Image (cartoon, rainbow, N blue to C red):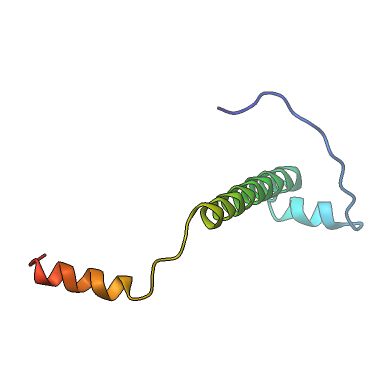
Length: 80
């Protein structure tokens, strides 16, 4: 769902940049909006992943030494 509420920010560009972008068919307002929304989404996702990684580290313990080898042997012996 797209929000109908908006906030306004202001960006200063070097003189002539806006005109160059306009001549290239680029809408600077739209590009800045897309970039900042994407940046916010990525940073939020990264924070969520970091929190999940911390939870996993806190609530899990490493496998005992030799577990993988033992498990593979058991699977092979049982014909899986």
